[in-house]
Length: 526
Image (cartoon, rainbow, N blue to C red; front, top):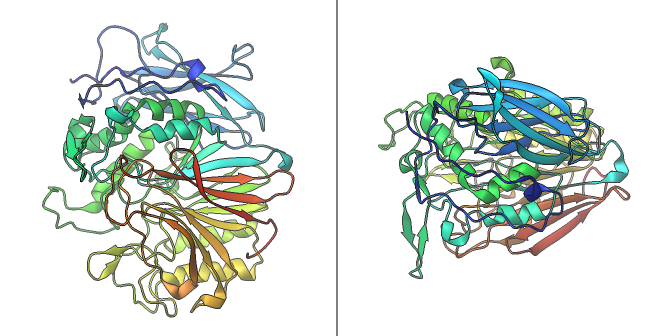
């Protein structure tokens, strides 16, 4: 039995709304062994902090990580003093879930600040409890006039750039926390399970990047414990744990939660892997993903354990979280004239069309883990995303997107906006039928942001099938630029409660707004 590091959790005052306190500096050692442990004495410790996920007007999911078996108890209150607190008895946390647990909260007041604390109790003696860990979040509003504001990005600890204690770790999370959003959307690549972290990397200008390293980040992830260690790695960062305690998240996944450019049924020829069956690797990663994030399907039956879902955030916003990874067909040149599987799978496409038609929210934000019109290659001949480089009529995976866009137009569905990450730069694309080979759709916008803590890359070329115009882009001119050389990117969506206008801001780390676009409500295209 190995020992987990004892990582200090953020204190209550650190996570208060509007706090001016900075996150603590990274205090963990450069080399860390972060494996689960049993302690024979002492009290349970929530050393990995707390998280809240998928907040609605009346519900939320609270997550905690323990250092040993424990009973999870959550208390919620309208005030920081925890007078008249409500108690929620959560699960027994043990080795089966890698000492993590999630407790659903129901019947919460809409549009209110909720203070919560999580206490871990010895399962054999409930009087023996650890130090409570505190957090706070806002429930979604019941009234339109309250407005909604959230952030999004993706791509964390990729391309060899992990937690660097010399620059204060993932400082971008502290910057995002200070913006005090209602929630954060992570658009995928929460980890890089195929990305090894070296203790140090020499940059082109001679400076040295230094990584905090762990055993699990010393090789590609294959076993369940190795995937768990990859998800656990990011929680070593003080900034991220403080962010988690204040800002709820909506989490989706993409390829690097398993390995680069994977698809169902793939058999690897990568010499780094002894396990070649990607479906088995994906199942292990999915289990670890559900253990380490507050997602709503952990306790569901296997048939219901799907990543795609709608998160309803009051009258102004429905967030459609897609899974463009689990149901796709094999990466290929993408020239098929008939493709019912595509990138979403037939069932998910039907679900998305149905739920978009049912939505009564002013804005329908489609959270995609891959871009639509940006060409993302996979090797010399295959393609990884939707676009395949031919600007003509839809082929391959483009056929599903054409069907969806046609449905949105013909059903008169208003207020659709696409958000994504994946490509490691930030940009804004406007799609319009007058520029497109396929013309049976209404104009729409797609906004790209990221990376959040990974390498930056040059801009991808555009595919003209759906008529994209790159209105704005900020990207480096060489591959894999480190976070020490290139600001990290995240986006902000601000929906005004009075006018219903939706403003998108593309932000760079350091407080700079690079681009802003205001969209009007009630339109099928703009």
